[in-house]
Image 1 (cartoon, rainbow, N blue to C red):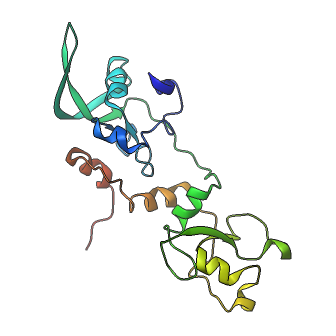
Image 2: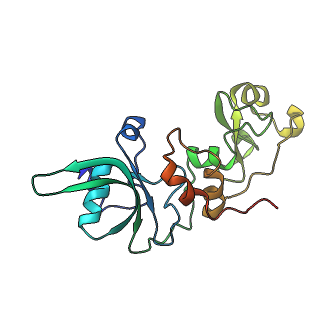
Image 3: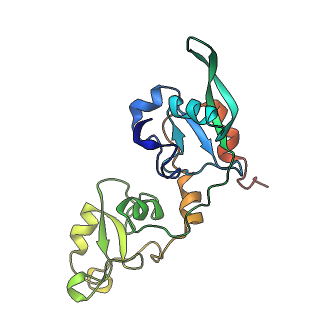
Amino acid sequence: MKGGTMDGDFRTEFVREPVALKHFPALVLNADYRPLSYYPLSLWPWQDAIKAVFLDRVDILAHYDEVVRSQRMEIQVPSVVVLREFVKPRKRVAFTRFNLFLRDEFACQYCGSRNDLTFDHVVPRKLGGVTSWENVVAACAPCNLRKGSKTLRESGMKLRQTPRRPDAELLRNLGRRFPPNHLHESWLDYLYWDTELDA
């Protein structure tokens, strides 16, 4: 198995390459029937899902129509699997460029543009501003250039929201708003079953 998925960290060994999505990925749910991750969506290549079945680490909840055969048997390709043992979600959110963009919903925090994103220090570094959740925001290149190393007051610009350290639950919920290009119909119940219903 590539990368030791079965023995590695369940929360990071997910399919990220679009090419892999063409080959029947399985949605991986935690033992509480929630996806291990929404962004990236917790997916395994079908080979890893079948191996996990034979290792008794998962149960199959849904299948593709495709069947794979060996000399001794055949098995329908799993489309949704659930872990038999609960994997505790991470509490701490890593301060990464990706997580910052996700917190800010992939939008410039000055003008709302979703194009040409970079990041900006609200209090400029030359004025003692630090690189932290509370001082760095997603910004489009034009706004970043316009603000430069000025303060908000000097630049005449305003933030759309106050930057804060997100928790894992917030990022998980935000991740649901950005589904991947490929969503198999058998996944939908498991991706959105615990969201609030509209009144």
